[in-house]
Length: 505
Image (tube, rainbow, N blue to C red):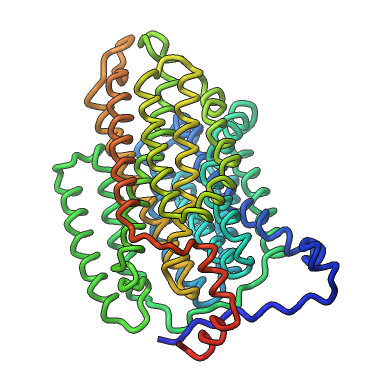
Protein backbone atom coordinates (compact mmCIF):
# COMPACT_ATOMS: atom_id res chain seq x y z
CA UNK A 1 0.00 0.00 0.00
CA UNK A 2 1.27 3.49 -0.83
CA UNK A 3 2.72 5.41 2.07
CA UNK A 4 0.91 8.54 3.32
CA UNK A 5 2.50 11.82 2.31
CA UNK A 6 4.41 13.05 5.38
CA UNK A 7 3.89 16.44 6.98
CA UNK A 8 6.73 18.72 5.94
CA UNK A 9 9.12 19.89 8.62
CA UNK A 10 8.23 23.28 10.05
CA UNK A 11 10.56 26.06 9.07
CA UNK A 12 12.70 27.70 11.68
CA UNK A 13 11.49 31.01 13.11
CA UNK A 14 13.15 34.06 11.65
CA UNK A 15 13.79 35.87 14.94
CA UNK A 16 14.06 35.24 18.66
CA UNK A 17 10.96 37.28 19.48
CA UNK A 18 8.81 34.79 17.58
CA UNK A 19 10.26 31.97 19.71
CA UNK A 20 9.45 33.76 22.95
CA UNK A 21 5.88 34.53 21.82
CA UNK A 22 4.40 31.54 19.91
CA UNK A 23 1.17 33.36 19.12
CA UNK A 24 3.12 36.16 17.43
CA UNK A 25 4.35 33.90 14.65
CA UNK A 26 0.91 32.41 13.96
CA UNK A 27 -1.32 34.54 11.71
CA UNK A 28 -4.96 35.11 12.61
CA UNK A 29 -6.14 32.41 10.20
CA UNK A 30 -4.06 29.77 11.98
CA UNK A 31 -5.26 30.91 15.40
CA UNK A 32 -8.86 30.56 14.22
CA UNK A 33 -8.47 26.96 12.98
CA UNK A 34 -9.59 25.32 16.24
CA UNK A 35 -12.54 27.72 16.86
CA UNK A 36 -13.76 27.29 13.28
CA UNK A 37 -13.67 23.49 13.52
CA UNK A 38 -15.28 23.53 16.97
CA UNK A 39 -18.08 25.74 15.65
CA UNK A 40 -18.67 23.20 12.89
CA UNK A 41 -18.90 20.42 15.47
CA UNK A 42 -21.46 22.34 17.51
CA UNK A 43 -23.48 23.01 14.35
CA UNK A 44 -23.60 19.28 13.68
CA UNK A 45 -24.99 18.59 17.17
CA UNK A 46 -27.47 21.47 16.92
CA UNK A 47 -28.68 20.11 13.58
CA UNK A 48 -29.41 16.73 15.17
CA UNK A 49 -31.49 18.18 18.03
CA UNK A 50 -33.39 21.14 16.56
CA UNK A 51 -36.17 19.02 15.12
CA UNK A 52 -37.05 17.40 18.48
CA UNK A 53 -39.32 20.25 19.74
CA UNK A 54 -41.21 20.12 16.44
CA UNK A 55 -42.07 16.42 16.49
CA UNK A 56 -45.38 16.66 18.42
CA UNK A 57 -46.72 19.35 16.04
CA UNK A 58 -45.30 18.16 12.72
CA UNK A 59 -48.22 15.80 11.88
CA UNK A 60 -50.55 18.83 12.04
CA UNK A 61 -48.12 21.14 10.23
CA UNK A 62 -47.33 18.74 7.39
CA UNK A 63 -50.50 16.67 7.16
CA UNK A 64 -48.43 13.49 7.60
CA UNK A 65 -48.83 10.61 10.03
CA UNK A 66 -46.76 10.46 13.24
CA UNK A 67 -44.93 7.45 11.81
CA UNK A 68 -43.91 9.38 8.71
CA UNK A 69 -42.84 12.36 10.81
CA UNK A 70 -40.57 10.18 12.93
CA UNK A 71 -38.49 9.60 9.80
CA UNK A 72 -37.21 13.15 10.09
CA UNK A 73 -35.10 11.78 12.93
CA UNK A 74 -34.55 8.28 11.53
CA UNK A 75 -33.36 9.52 8.11
CA UNK A 76 -30.68 11.69 9.70
CA UNK A 77 -29.51 8.83 11.90
CA UNK A 78 -29.28 6.39 8.99
CA UNK A 79 -27.56 8.73 6.55
CA UNK A 80 -25.14 9.90 9.23
CA UNK A 81 -24.18 6.35 10.13
CA UNK A 82 -23.56 5.48 6.48
CA UNK A 83 -21.81 8.68 5.42
CA UNK A 84 -19.49 9.12 8.43
CA UNK A 85 -17.01 6.34 7.54
CA UNK A 86 -17.46 6.95 3.81
CA UNK A 87 -16.69 10.67 4.04
CA UNK A 88 -13.86 9.93 6.46
CA UNK A 89 -12.22 7.70 3.88
CA UNK A 90 -12.85 10.27 1.16
CA UNK A 91 -11.18 12.88 3.33
CA UNK A 92 -8.10 10.72 3.78
CA UNK A 93 -7.87 10.27 0.02
CA UNK A 94 -8.98 13.57 -1.52
CA UNK A 95 -8.46 16.18 1.20
CA UNK A 96 -10.09 16.54 4.61
CA UNK A 97 -10.84 20.28 4.32
CA UNK A 98 -12.52 19.76 0.96
CA UNK A 99 -14.75 16.95 2.23
CA UNK A 100 -15.49 18.83 5.48
CA UNK A 101 -16.75 21.86 3.52
CA UNK A 102 -18.87 19.54 1.36
CA UNK A 103 -20.42 17.91 4.47
CA UNK A 104 -21.27 21.29 6.01
CA UNK A 105 -22.60 22.44 2.63
CA UNK A 106 -25.01 19.48 2.49
CA UNK A 107 -26.19 20.41 5.99
CA UNK A 108 -26.93 23.97 4.82
CA UNK A 109 -28.72 22.68 1.71
CA UNK A 110 -30.89 20.44 3.88
CA UNK A 111 -31.78 23.37 6.14
CA UNK A 112 -32.80 25.52 3.17
CA UNK A 113 -34.97 22.70 1.79
CA UNK A 114 -36.70 22.32 5.19
CA UNK A 115 -37.22 26.09 5.40
CA UNK A 116 -38.87 26.23 1.97
CA UNK A 117 -41.19 23.20 2.17
CA UNK A 118 -43.87 21.61 4.30
CA UNK A 119 -44.02 18.41 2.24
CA UNK A 120 -43.01 15.46 4.39
CA UNK A 121 -41.15 13.75 1.53
CA UNK A 122 -39.00 16.83 0.94
CA UNK A 123 -38.42 17.24 4.67
CA UNK A 124 -37.25 13.64 5.08
CA UNK A 125 -34.94 13.95 2.07
CA UNK A 126 -33.53 17.19 3.46
CA UNK A 127 -32.91 15.64 6.86
CA UNK A 128 -31.09 12.75 5.18
CA UNK A 129 -28.80 15.29 3.49
CA UNK A 130 -28.13 16.89 6.87
CA UNK A 131 -26.87 13.54 8.14
CA UNK A 132 -23.67 14.18 6.19
CA UNK A 133 -22.70 16.61 8.95
CA UNK A 134 -22.06 13.63 11.24
CA UNK A 135 -18.67 13.33 9.53
CA UNK A 136 -17.64 16.82 10.71
CA UNK A 137 -16.13 15.68 14.02
CA UNK A 138 -13.88 12.83 12.73
CA UNK A 139 -12.73 14.95 9.79
CA UNK A 140 -11.95 17.87 12.09
CA UNK A 141 -10.03 15.68 14.54
CA UNK A 142 -7.93 14.35 11.68
CA UNK A 143 -7.21 17.91 10.51
CA UNK A 144 -6.13 18.85 14.03
CA UNK A 145 -3.68 15.96 14.10
CA UNK A 146 -2.19 17.00 10.78
CA UNK A 147 -2.00 20.75 11.39
CA UNK A 148 -1.33 21.38 15.08
CA UNK A 149 1.93 20.92 17.00
CA UNK A 150 1.91 17.99 19.45
CA UNK A 151 1.54 20.14 22.56
CA UNK A 152 -1.75 21.62 21.28
CA UNK A 153 -3.33 18.50 19.79
CA UNK A 154 -4.68 16.97 22.99
CA UNK A 155 -6.61 20.04 24.18
CA UNK A 156 -7.93 20.76 20.68
CA UNK A 157 -9.16 17.20 20.19
CA UNK A 158 -10.79 17.25 23.64
CA UNK A 159 -12.64 20.46 22.76
CA UNK A 160 -13.67 19.03 19.39
CA UNK A 161 -15.05 15.90 21.04
CA UNK A 162 -16.98 17.98 23.59
CA UNK A 163 -18.78 19.96 20.90
CA UNK A 164 -21.22 17.05 20.50
CA UNK A 165 -22.61 17.58 24.00
CA UNK A 166 -22.27 21.36 23.93
CA UNK A 167 -24.17 21.72 20.67
CA UNK A 168 -26.91 19.32 21.76
CA UNK A 169 -27.37 21.21 25.03
CA UNK A 170 -27.60 24.55 23.20
CA UNK A 171 -29.72 23.32 20.30
CA UNK A 172 -32.72 22.09 22.26
CA UNK A 173 -33.63 25.31 24.13
CA UNK A 174 -32.74 27.45 21.09
CA UNK A 175 -35.04 25.45 18.83
CA UNK A 176 -37.79 25.41 21.46
CA UNK A 177 -37.68 29.21 21.80
CA UNK A 178 -37.89 29.69 18.03
CA UNK A 179 -40.76 27.21 17.67
CA UNK A 180 -42.64 28.82 20.57
CA UNK A 181 -42.39 32.42 19.36
CA UNK A 182 -41.97 32.18 15.55
CA UNK A 183 -43.00 30.17 12.51
CA UNK A 184 -41.37 26.74 12.53
CA UNK A 185 -39.65 27.40 9.19
CA UNK A 186 -37.66 30.17 10.89
CA UNK A 187 -35.79 27.51 12.85
CA UNK A 188 -34.41 26.03 9.64
CA UNK A 189 -33.54 29.46 8.24
CA UNK A 190 -31.58 30.03 11.44
CA UNK A 191 -29.65 26.76 11.06
CA UNK A 192 -29.03 27.56 7.38
CA UNK A 193 -27.57 30.92 8.36
CA UNK A 194 -25.39 29.41 11.09
CA UNK A 195 -24.28 26.69 8.68
CA UNK A 196 -23.28 29.27 6.10
CA UNK A 197 -21.16 30.99 8.74
CA UNK A 198 -19.58 27.62 9.55
CA UNK A 199 -18.75 26.88 5.92
CA UNK A 200 -17.22 30.32 5.50
CA UNK A 201 -15.19 29.98 8.70
CA UNK A 202 -13.76 26.61 7.67
CA UNK A 203 -13.01 27.82 4.15
CA UNK A 204 -11.13 30.85 5.53
CA UNK A 205 -9.40 29.49 8.63
CA UNK A 206 -8.59 25.84 7.85
CA UNK A 207 -5.74 24.87 5.56
CA UNK A 208 -5.85 21.73 3.44
CA UNK A 209 -3.77 18.98 5.02
CA UNK A 210 -0.92 17.60 2.90
CA UNK A 211 -1.36 14.13 4.46
CA UNK A 212 -3.15 11.85 1.99
CA UNK A 213 -3.73 8.11 1.57
CA UNK A 214 -3.64 7.66 -2.21
CA UNK A 215 -5.59 4.96 -4.00
CA UNK A 216 -8.93 4.21 -5.66
CA UNK A 217 -12.12 4.74 -3.66
CA UNK A 218 -13.80 1.45 -2.69
CA UNK A 219 -17.26 1.98 -4.21
CA UNK A 220 -18.33 -1.65 -3.65
CA UNK A 221 -17.30 -1.44 -0.01
CA UNK A 222 -19.18 1.83 0.48
CA UNK A 223 -22.38 0.40 -1.02
CA UNK A 224 -22.09 -2.81 0.99
CA UNK A 225 -21.54 -0.91 4.23
CA UNK A 226 -24.47 1.38 3.45
CA UNK A 227 -26.91 -1.49 2.85
CA UNK A 228 -25.71 -3.41 5.91
CA UNK A 229 -25.92 -0.42 8.24
CA UNK A 230 -29.33 0.65 6.96
CA UNK A 231 -30.71 -2.84 7.59
CA UNK A 232 -29.16 -2.98 11.08
CA UNK A 233 -30.15 0.49 12.28
CA UNK A 234 -33.58 0.44 10.68
CA UNK A 235 -34.32 -2.81 12.51
CA UNK A 236 -33.12 -1.30 15.81
CA UNK A 237 -34.98 1.99 15.40
CA UNK A 238 -38.27 0.55 14.19
CA UNK A 239 -38.21 -2.69 16.19
CA UNK A 240 -40.49 -1.34 18.90
CA UNK A 241 -43.08 -0.04 16.43
CA UNK A 242 -43.02 -2.95 14.00
CA UNK A 243 -42.56 -5.70 16.60
CA UNK A 244 -39.22 -7.30 17.43
CA UNK A 245 -40.45 -10.68 16.24
CA UNK A 246 -42.10 -9.40 13.07
CA UNK A 247 -41.00 -10.66 9.67
CA UNK A 248 -39.83 -7.19 8.65
CA UNK A 249 -37.54 -6.69 11.64
CA UNK A 250 -36.15 -10.23 11.56
CA UNK A 251 -35.59 -9.89 7.83
CA UNK A 252 -33.70 -6.65 8.35
CA UNK A 253 -31.45 -8.20 10.98
CA UNK A 254 -30.75 -11.27 8.84
CA UNK A 255 -30.05 -9.03 5.87
CA UNK A 256 -27.68 -6.93 8.00
CA UNK A 257 -25.75 -10.00 9.15
CA UNK A 258 -25.47 -11.35 5.61
CA UNK A 259 -24.51 -8.05 3.99
CA UNK A 260 -22.02 -7.01 6.67
CA UNK A 261 -20.49 -10.47 6.53
CA UNK A 262 -19.97 -10.15 2.77
CA UNK A 263 -18.66 -6.62 3.29
CA UNK A 264 -16.13 -7.87 5.85
CA UNK A 265 -14.97 -10.57 3.42
CA UNK A 266 -14.61 -7.97 0.66
CA UNK A 267 -12.67 -5.54 2.86
CA UNK A 268 -10.10 -8.19 3.75
CA UNK A 269 -9.45 -9.00 0.09
CA UNK A 270 -9.52 -5.66 -1.67
CA UNK A 271 -6.18 -3.84 -1.96
CA UNK A 272 -7.79 -0.45 -1.20
CA UNK A 273 -10.46 -1.12 1.46
CA UNK A 274 -12.93 1.46 2.69
CA UNK A 275 -12.06 0.39 6.25
CA UNK A 276 -8.75 -1.28 7.01
CA UNK A 277 -10.01 -4.20 9.09
CA UNK A 278 -6.45 -5.24 9.87
CA UNK A 279 -6.23 -2.10 11.95
CA UNK A 280 -9.55 -2.91 13.61
CA UNK A 281 -8.18 -6.32 14.60
CA UNK A 282 -5.51 -4.63 16.69
CA UNK A 283 -6.63 -4.68 20.35
CA UNK A 284 -5.89 -0.97 20.80
CA UNK A 285 -8.18 -0.04 17.90
CA UNK A 286 -10.81 -2.77 18.21
CA UNK A 287 -11.33 -2.32 21.96
CA UNK A 288 -11.53 1.44 21.45
CA UNK A 289 -14.41 0.85 19.02
CA UNK A 290 -16.12 -1.47 21.54
CA UNK A 291 -15.72 1.19 24.23
CA UNK A 292 -17.19 3.79 21.84
CA UNK A 293 -20.26 1.60 21.24
CA UNK A 294 -20.85 1.15 24.97
CA UNK A 295 -20.12 4.79 25.81
CA UNK A 296 -22.56 5.98 23.15
CA UNK A 297 -25.25 3.81 24.76
CA UNK A 298 -24.46 5.03 28.27
CA UNK A 299 -24.27 8.72 27.34
CA UNK A 300 -27.46 8.86 25.29
CA UNK A 301 -29.69 7.53 28.06
CA UNK A 302 -28.94 10.64 30.11
CA UNK A 303 -30.48 13.21 27.76
CA UNK A 304 -33.12 10.85 26.35
CA UNK A 305 -34.57 9.80 29.71
CA UNK A 306 -34.09 13.13 31.49
CA UNK A 307 -36.04 15.00 28.83
CA UNK A 308 -39.04 12.69 29.27
CA UNK A 309 -38.82 12.51 33.05
CA UNK A 310 -38.90 16.24 33.77
CA UNK A 311 -41.75 16.79 31.28
CA UNK A 312 -43.92 14.09 32.89
CA UNK A 313 -47.12 15.47 34.46
CA UNK A 314 -47.00 16.38 38.12
CA UNK A 315 -49.94 14.02 38.64
CA UNK A 316 -47.53 11.09 38.28
CA UNK A 317 -46.03 11.96 41.68
CA UNK A 318 -42.53 12.36 40.29
CA UNK A 319 -42.87 14.47 37.13
CA UNK A 320 -42.17 18.19 37.12
CA UNK A 321 -44.38 19.14 34.17
CA UNK A 322 -41.69 21.28 32.54
CA UNK A 323 -42.02 22.77 29.08
CA UNK A 324 -39.61 21.89 26.28
CA UNK A 325 -37.79 25.21 26.81
CA UNK A 326 -37.40 24.53 30.53
CA UNK A 327 -36.23 21.00 29.71
CA UNK A 328 -33.52 22.39 27.48
CA UNK A 329 -32.38 24.66 30.30
CA UNK A 330 -32.18 21.64 32.62
CA UNK A 331 -29.83 19.94 30.15
CA UNK A 332 -27.81 23.11 29.50
CA UNK A 333 -25.51 22.79 32.57
CA UNK A 334 -24.32 19.44 31.23
CA UNK A 335 -23.17 21.12 28.03
CA UNK A 336 -21.39 23.84 29.99
CA UNK A 337 -19.69 21.17 32.11
CA UNK A 338 -18.40 19.51 28.94
CA UNK A 339 -16.90 22.79 27.76
CA UNK A 340 -15.26 23.50 31.13
CA UNK A 341 -13.80 20.03 31.62
CA UNK A 342 -12.48 19.46 28.09
CA UNK A 343 -9.04 20.96 28.93
CA UNK A 344 -8.96 18.90 32.13
CA UNK A 345 -9.48 15.72 30.14
CA UNK A 346 -6.68 16.76 27.77
CA UNK A 347 -4.25 17.25 30.65
CA UNK A 348 -5.27 13.90 32.13
CA UNK A 349 -4.59 12.16 28.81
CA UNK A 350 -1.25 13.94 28.39
CA UNK A 351 -0.09 12.81 31.83
CA UNK A 352 -1.54 9.32 32.17
CA UNK A 353 -2.57 8.38 28.63
CA UNK A 354 -6.01 8.35 26.94
CA UNK A 355 -6.70 4.80 28.13
CA UNK A 356 -6.79 5.99 31.74
CA UNK A 357 -8.90 9.01 30.78
CA UNK A 358 -11.42 6.74 29.06
CA UNK A 359 -11.62 4.46 32.09
CA UNK A 360 -12.07 7.42 34.44
CA UNK A 361 -14.70 8.97 32.20
CA UNK A 362 -16.85 5.86 31.92
CA UNK A 363 -16.57 5.30 35.69
CA UNK A 364 -17.77 8.86 36.26
CA UNK A 365 -20.71 8.22 33.91
CA UNK A 366 -21.66 5.21 36.05
CA UNK A 367 -21.37 7.39 39.17
CA UNK A 368 -23.70 9.93 37.59
CA UNK A 369 -26.34 7.25 37.13
CA UNK A 370 -25.96 6.28 40.78
CA UNK A 371 -26.90 9.89 41.59
CA UNK A 372 -29.84 9.67 39.17
CA UNK A 373 -31.12 6.51 40.82
CA UNK A 374 -30.65 7.95 44.33
CA UNK A 375 -32.88 10.96 43.59
CA UNK A 376 -34.80 11.71 40.41
CA UNK A 377 -37.56 13.78 42.01
CA UNK A 378 -35.81 16.99 43.04
CA UNK A 379 -34.87 19.31 40.18
CA UNK A 380 -31.46 20.25 41.59
CA UNK A 381 -30.48 16.60 42.03
CA UNK A 382 -31.61 15.84 38.47
CA UNK A 383 -29.39 18.67 37.21
CA UNK A 384 -26.44 17.45 39.33
CA UNK A 385 -26.79 13.86 38.14
CA UNK A 386 -27.06 14.90 34.49
CA UNK A 387 -24.03 17.17 34.90
CA UNK A 388 -21.95 14.34 36.39
CA UNK A 389 -22.83 12.13 33.42
CA UNK A 390 -21.87 15.02 31.12
CA UNK A 391 -18.50 15.38 32.85
CA UNK A 392 -17.76 11.68 32.44
CA UNK A 393 -18.81 11.86 28.80
CA UNK A 394 -16.31 14.69 28.26
CA UNK A 395 -13.46 12.53 29.55
CA UNK A 396 -14.56 9.49 27.54
CA UNK A 397 -15.28 11.27 24.26
CA UNK A 398 -12.01 13.22 24.37
CA UNK A 399 -9.99 10.04 25.04
CA UNK A 400 -11.48 7.90 22.26
CA UNK A 401 -10.07 9.89 19.31
CA UNK A 402 -6.69 10.19 21.05
CA UNK A 403 -6.56 6.39 21.31
CA UNK A 404 -7.32 6.13 17.60
CA UNK A 405 -4.78 8.82 16.65
CA UNK A 406 -2.07 6.96 18.53
CA UNK A 407 -2.86 3.61 16.93
CA UNK A 408 -3.38 4.26 13.20
CA UNK A 409 -1.18 5.74 10.45
CA UNK A 410 -1.59 9.50 9.78
CA UNK A 411 -3.16 8.80 6.38
CA UNK A 412 -6.07 6.84 7.90
CA UNK A 413 -7.06 8.99 10.86
CA UNK A 414 -10.26 10.42 9.34
CA UNK A 415 -11.62 7.02 8.27
CA UNK A 416 -10.61 5.35 11.56
CA UNK A 417 -12.23 8.10 13.63
CA UNK A 418 -15.23 7.89 11.33
CA UNK A 419 -15.67 4.23 12.28
CA UNK A 420 -15.32 5.19 15.95
CA UNK A 421 -18.07 7.81 15.60
CA UNK A 422 -20.16 5.21 13.75
CA UNK A 423 -19.87 2.88 16.73
CA UNK A 424 -21.07 5.65 19.03
CA UNK A 425 -24.04 6.22 16.69
CA UNK A 426 -24.95 2.53 16.76
CA UNK A 427 -24.70 2.61 20.56
CA UNK A 428 -27.07 5.57 20.70
CA UNK A 429 -29.56 3.84 18.40
CA UNK A 430 -29.44 0.73 20.57
CA UNK A 431 -29.96 2.86 23.67
CA UNK A 432 -33.01 4.53 22.15
CA UNK A 433 -34.56 1.17 21.28
CA UNK A 434 -33.85 -0.32 24.72
CA UNK A 435 -35.13 2.72 26.62
CA UNK A 436 -38.35 2.75 24.60
CA UNK A 437 -38.85 -0.97 25.26
CA UNK A 438 -38.25 -0.52 29.00
CA UNK A 439 -40.56 2.47 29.37
CA UNK A 440 -43.34 0.86 27.34
CA UNK A 441 -43.29 -2.15 29.68
CA UNK A 442 -43.43 0.04 32.81
CA UNK A 443 -46.41 2.38 32.50
CA UNK A 444 -49.40 3.38 34.61
CA UNK A 445 -52.51 5.38 33.58
CA UNK A 446 -52.54 9.07 34.45
CA UNK A 447 -55.74 10.83 33.38
CA UNK A 448 -56.55 7.85 31.19
CA UNK A 449 -53.19 8.07 29.36
CA UNK A 450 -50.42 5.49 29.92
CA UNK A 451 -47.33 7.23 31.30
CA UNK A 452 -43.98 5.62 32.19
CA UNK A 453 -43.51 4.95 35.88
CA UNK A 454 -40.60 6.22 37.95
CA UNK A 455 -39.46 2.60 38.30
CA UNK A 456 -39.15 2.39 34.50
CA UNK A 457 -36.98 5.50 34.39
CA UNK A 458 -34.77 4.26 37.22
CA UNK A 459 -34.41 0.91 35.48
CA UNK A 460 -33.26 2.72 32.34
CA UNK A 461 -30.70 4.66 34.40
CA UNK A 462 -29.50 1.43 36.01
CA UNK A 463 -29.00 -0.26 32.64
CA UNK A 464 -27.05 2.73 31.35
CA UNK A 465 -24.86 2.64 34.47
CA UNK A 466 -24.09 -1.04 33.96
CA UNK A 467 -23.21 -0.39 30.31
CA UNK A 468 -20.89 2.43 31.45
CA UNK A 469 -19.09 -0.03 33.74
CA UNK A 470 -18.74 -2.43 30.80
CA UNK A 471 -17.20 0.43 28.82
CA UNK A 472 -14.80 1.02 31.72
CA UNK A 473 -13.85 -2.66 31.63
CA UNK A 474 -13.19 -2.44 27.88
CA UNK A 475 -11.04 0.65 28.46
CA UNK A 476 -8.93 -1.13 31.07
CA UNK A 477 -8.48 -4.06 28.68
CA UNK A 478 -6.92 -1.81 26.02
CA UNK A 479 -3.18 -2.54 25.90
CA UNK A 480 -1.31 0.03 27.95
CA UNK A 481 1.27 2.30 26.41
CA UNK A 482 3.87 4.04 28.54
CA UNK A 483 4.19 6.67 25.81
CA UNK A 484 1.27 9.11 25.89
CA UNK A 485 -0.40 10.39 22.75
CA UNK A 486 1.35 13.75 23.00
CA UNK A 487 4.77 12.14 23.38
CA UNK A 488 4.13 9.86 20.44
CA UNK A 489 3.03 12.80 18.31
CA UNK A 490 6.19 14.64 19.27
CA UNK A 491 8.27 11.67 18.18
CA UNK A 492 6.41 11.54 14.86
CA UNK A 493 7.47 15.12 14.20
CA UNK A 494 11.15 14.58 14.90
CA UNK A 495 13.51 14.75 11.87
CA UNK A 496 14.27 11.03 12.20
CA UNK A 497 10.58 10.12 12.08
CA UNK A 498 10.00 12.32 9.06
CA UNK A 499 13.03 10.92 7.25
CA UNK A 500 11.81 7.40 7.97
CA UNK A 501 8.36 8.23 6.58
CA UNK A 502 9.92 9.62 3.41
CA UNK A 503 11.93 6.47 2.94
CA UNK A 504 8.77 4.35 3.30
CA UNK A 505 9.95 2.61 6.45
